[in-house]
Amino acid sequence: KNMTFYADPQSGSTTLKATYYGQKLGSSEYEELYAVTFKGSSSVTVTKEEFVEIEGYKFNQSKSTKTGEKYNGAVFYYDRASFRLEFYNGTTMAREESVLYQESFSKFSSYTPDLPSEFEPGSRRFVGWYLNPECTGEMVDLSKMTMPADNMALYAKWELVTHQVSIYKEKYDDGTFGDSVLPNGQQPDPVLH
Figure 1 (cartoon, rainbow, N blue to C red):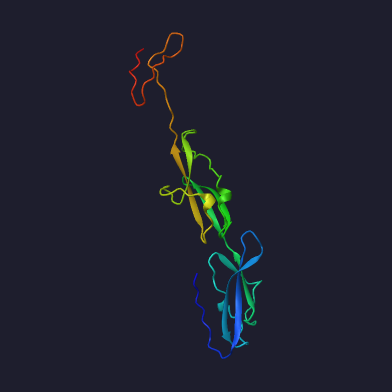
Figure 2 (figure 1 turned 60 degrees about the horizontal axis):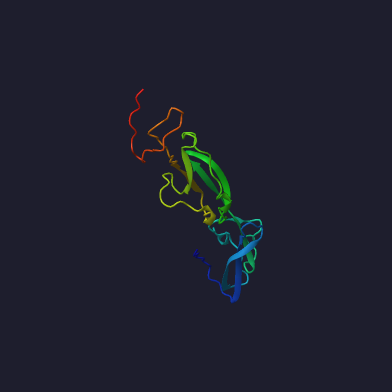
C-alpha cells in the first residue's frame, strides 16, 4: 500500500530512520513491514502523525516509540487485527469465528453445518460455501483462502438429493417382483384393486 508522509522542512544532513513492524502470523514476534528514511536535523522527534493506520493491523502504542522521543531509530509496532468470519446456514448464523488478518481458512475446510430444519432429513446434500446468500458464482475453497482486512460472511449451499426409484410392472403371488422395470421417466399403469 502506498503511503504519503509530510515533513516540516528542516536543515540538517543526518539520515533519520523509523521502522514499522507487523506481528507475524501465529506468533508474538514482529517482522519489518517498511522503514521511513529521510535527511533532517538530529533533533527531529516523533509526533502522532507517525502512528499511521496499516490495513489489517492495530497500532500497539505500549510497545512503540512515544511522542516527543527522538525520531531516529524510532520503532512502531502493529498487532494483527481480528475480524469476524460468519457461516450462514439458510437465514441463520450457524457459526462465528474470530480470525486474524491473513490467517488461513484451512482449519474450517471440513466444517459442514447441520441440515436446516426446514428440509426433510436425507432430502438435501451440503455442496459447499459461497460468498453470497444466493449461493451463486464460484464455490469458495476454504483451504486456499485467508482472512481479509474486514469481516466476512460465507453461505451454505444445499442441493436436492436424487433418489433412484424402481417400479416393477408385475408382482407375483409369492411376493416377489418381475424382472421388468419401467424405464426412467415412464409412468406406470394405474393399479386397479
